[in-house]
Image 1 (spheres, each protein chain N blue to C red):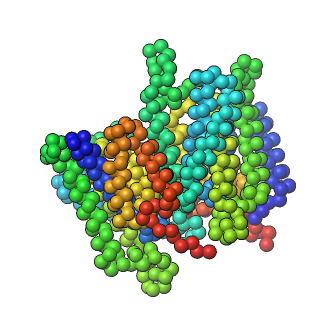
Image 2: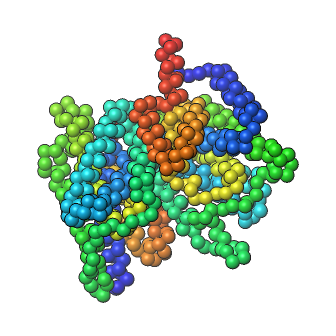
Image 3: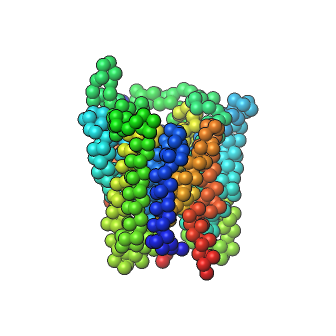
Length: 328
Length: 292
């Protein structure tokens, strides 16, 4: 079922209003912090959804683009003293470049082959980072490596809200930056989804040969979706680095990949609202499992299996189907 | 010459591991179109099961290996009936299976983590001793691994070629609907293939635990390597997998020796990507006929 632009806009404005008001309703530092993280995942999931759900390319290297964003931001801040704002913007460009390269390497393949190759690329980059021991600078007696190796990077500067916001509401600064980024990212996804390019992506997903027969250039269209989806993903990576003030190789591991994948699947891949709904549900589930740290990953795995088995269209997809059945 | 022999020996051992690992994946993909992302976790579980059978139950090594192979088969069948069977006749089968098995991998890995802890454990069986060839020590264990995976490959190929069940599997692989119409019990064939791949995974899990130590994530890297072998061979081609595994193992050993251990995997990957740009369906794979 297709909601009209008006309905979608209304929903978007309502959600945005809630997001803007939230820090004043729940002023707790913890809640606002978790909401910031959630919105970062919303950005990543919504952009991944463009590749996976809309264009139907099973890329597992999306978190690698996120990692590139985070690492480039940290490296520029730490070694070249870039201000955080500028570092995030450069990181966005780097993310687009890396994603285009990955797309170019993988797009001759299809289906499961793409999943395998992107996963292998992601793992190769992860391995290169954790085994990084070449010094590029000595600070005292310790050796600093470019990517921080297994230790990760820290102390690379923030947006500076500490200097000009009163102490009691400092944590709100990062939150609003991420709210703005998430709104832009979702707006971007929506615009792309309803543009002629979005139609081409969906046509290629639903019937590749027919779409190509009608003159859609598959390679070009799918390369564009790789590049386009990387922009806000890399920005999200940069924001994540600046918000947490630490970047580690853990963001490139399977559990994180699984977490964001679950958001997309549980929410409903291929739908516009799916990633947002999924991120909210998964963050809540994660919050609930917090006291059982040992079982957290297992719980996520079970949620993912159950979601695929019981409602493969996700919450948003099933809701859409329910709406459609009522209308007729 | 000594370094050359050294490279060849370690390369062949790597090849053997890759071949055994990719056999199970290749079988699942080639006949059912199932990409099993939980393969690495199954390897890990079987490695630990063998450990448990020897240390916990005090079984002699041969019996423990037998028990683990059996358990691997049961695990494969369980995966099929609990998860895969549910989505067999629904849309997006290929994608859904990948997602569900990623989740399963996480569940199994964390079950091991909860049961045994994160610290590496040494597998209790091991074959000591070595022979000297051209001035290089070759551990007998490596030779056993090489021989075992050769036997596994030959046995699988023979099973597919000459038995009734093997014929049924090949029929389903060619056309699931036609096989069903001809009276092939497709559901039983699926379960059969999953069981077989479970047994093969158990065998490679035990071999893997001999050369490394047991840890909850020990299956992940070998799984990726096995994936790459399958991709370069063309998913589903067993003969191709053997040749690709051989090439990959030797190449990786040489790269590790020439450039450094750290770059073994990345350089290999770049070579793979170049190969795939040249031959998108792998060296031995054939394009699946797309149905409109």
